[in-house]
Length: 259
Ligand SMILES: [Zn+2]
Ligand SMILES: [Zn+2]
Image 1 (cartoon, rainbow, N blue to C red):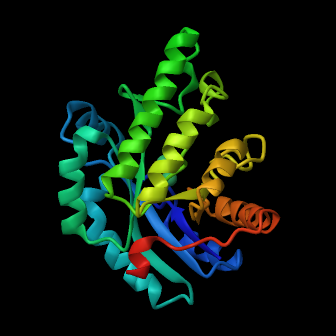
Image 2 (image 1 turned 90 degrees about the vertical axis):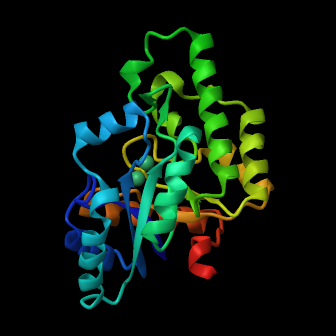
């Protein structure tokens, strides 16, 4: 089993070496570092870079050297990957950055709608139901654009807003089918993401109904713990192993690793 989505101290996670050691003790065969990266020229994106202070677009070469050194010291396959913030307005910047950086593979994520992170419940509690529905609809529009852009190997945590109580349970089958149709036509594949697995109702992204619709469309999946800390790699990898067994899944690898 390989985990294609973890973070390190090159964004908001723990030191590379500790993550590798945790993956070894979890019995994984491969580990992909997919640190957060946004290259959007829009003011909101530049402001996020200033506020958070991590900028994989500036540090990926240093991280690459560190990953290379760790390769000499482990039997795991280590991957030098990225989790890019996606917005249709940023496609040009994302395309040229990915072409010049040459990662092993790229993950794309919709984290924001209208400049607001969909994981922050407090931003949505005061919104009226119709407004919440519009946010959900916009989120899935963005996700379809991400898949159709063909910029990425993997689309991360495809129903991220299910983590957020005021937005949870509002998505429609029509939205899920629209996303599944887009995946069926694209090289981009979704992941089974364990980011909410052990804190939130013991389920994965995508939740059950969405997962079944994706399976009806014969869409393959990669696995990602989305771990930011070593203990999360171990706990979530075990959770994913049980999930794979329960649904008799055959997880795949990012398309770029097969090409
Ligand atoms: Zn993410
Ligand atoms: Zn992540």
